[in-house]
Image (cartoon, rainbow, N blue to C red; front, side, top):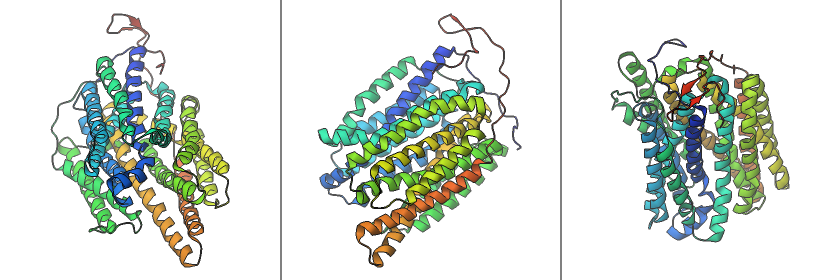
Amino acid sequence: MTEGAMLAPHATPILSPGRVTAVLRILVLSTFVVLLNETIMVNAIPRLMREFEVTAAAAGWLSTAFMLTMAVVIPVTGWFLQRVTTRTAFGLAMALFLVGTALAAAAPTFAVLLVARVIQAAGTAVMMPLLMTTLMTLVPPHDRGRVMGNITLVISVAPALGPAVSGVLLQLGTWRLLFLAVLPIAGAMAVFGQRKLVNVGEPQAGPIDWLSVPLAAAGFGALVYGLSGLGSGDESSPVVPPEVTTLVGAVLVGLFTWRQLALQRSSTPLLDLRALTFRHFSVALGLMCVSFMALMGAFILLPIYLQEVCGLTSLQTGLLLIPGGLTMGLLGPQVGKLYDRLGAPRLVVPGAALTALCLALFALMGEETSPWLVLAVHVALSAGMAFVFTPVFTSGLSVLPPPLYPHGSAILGSLQQVAAAAGTALVISVMSGRTATAAADGADPTNALATGIQWGFGVGAALGGLTVLVALLVRTPPVPEQPVAPEAQDEDGTTTDKTAPTPI
C-alpha cells in the first residue's frame, strides 16, 4: 500500500477548545505523575541493596523490569486504544499504576517490589500512547506544534525531577516514601480524571490475533532484555548469553512483523504497519531511534561520571541534572510555536548539530573537568534535544490518517524502548571494555573509568553525527485545509468557535 492509501473512516468528536484543553490537561498531568515515578528510584538502589540484601545486578532489575514491561505492553496499545473508550483506557492505566504503587510501598520482600514495578510499568505503557493519540485526534494540524511543545514541557521535566525528588525524600526517611508520596497524587488524578474526562472517538469492535500477542511480547521483551544484558558487563553470568537472547528477540520481532503484514491483507493486524508507508513518519521514526540511542547512552554515563570520577553525591548529581530537564521543558512551547511558523527542517537540523557537538564535548571531559562545565554542556544538550524531539514527534504523527494514530504512537513507543536499550548496551559495553584495557595498561581505577567513559561518550558523538545526516531528510508535511465550522454547540449548550486555537 502506498503513502496516503485510504483507510477506514474515524470518528473525530466535536468539542469546544475549552473541553479539548480540559481533556489534554488531565492526560498530561496524569502522564507527569507516572513518568516521575519512572526515574524516582535512581538514588534508592544502594539502600535497597542493603535492606533486601541483594546484589547490584539484582537491584538493577527494578529498572530493567520496568523497561521490559513497557516494551511488551506498548505494541498491544495500538489495537487496544481503538477498541475501548478514552475513559476506560485512562481508568485501566491509572488503576494499574495505583495498584503497583501501593504494592511497592508495602512490599515486604524484593520479589514483591519487583512485581509492583512491573504493574506500574503496565499502566505507564498505556498512558503515553493514550496521550499522543488523543492529542492527534483533537488538535487541528495547524495548532499541533504549539500544543506538542507545551506537552513536551511536562513530559521532559518529570524524568529530570525524578532523581532530585528521590534524593530529597530519601534524606527525609525510608525508601517507601518514594511511593507513599506519589500514591495520593496519583489517586487524586485518577478520581478527577474519571469525573471530568470525556470519550474521544468511538471504539471499533474487531478481533484480536492471539498469535501476534505472544510474538510481540516475547520478541520485544527478549530484544530489549538481550540488549540490556549486552551492556551489563561482567556483573552477572546469565544462563542464556545476552547475544543469544538478542538474536532470538530479533527473529521473533521479524516473525511478528511478517504476521502483521499478512494480516493487513486479510484481517485486522495487532499493530498496523501501514504507518511505515508514510515517508514523513518513517524518517521521523528513524531520527528518533538514532537520537534515543545517542542520548540514552549519554544519560547512563553522566551519573557514573559525576559520582565516580568527579566525586559528587547522588543528590548533587540529581540537582545538577535538573536544569537540563527544565531547559528542554521550557523550550518546548517556544519550539512548538516556531514549528507552526517555520516547519521542521529549520529546527531539527540545528538541534541535531548542537546535540552532536555537546556529545563530542562530553567525550573530551576528564577527571579535572569542572562540574559547572558539565552543567553548561548538559543544558546545551537539552536545548538541542528540544529542537529535535518536538518537531519530529509533531511532523511524524501529523501525516498519519486518524485510524493510524494509535498504531503510529505504539510503533513510536515500542522502538523508543528498543533504541534506548540498544544505545545503553552499546555505550556501556564500550565503556567497560576501554576501562578494562586502561586498567590493564597500569591506570588507576578512577583514571581508567574516566577513559572508558570518554570512549562511551565518543560512541554517542558518532551516533549524534548520524543523527545530523538523518535530520537532513526531515520535511514538514503539508497542513490540510481546515473545514469551516465557526460555530457548534458544546454539551452544555453554549456556542463556541471551533476554529479557535487550543488554549493548552
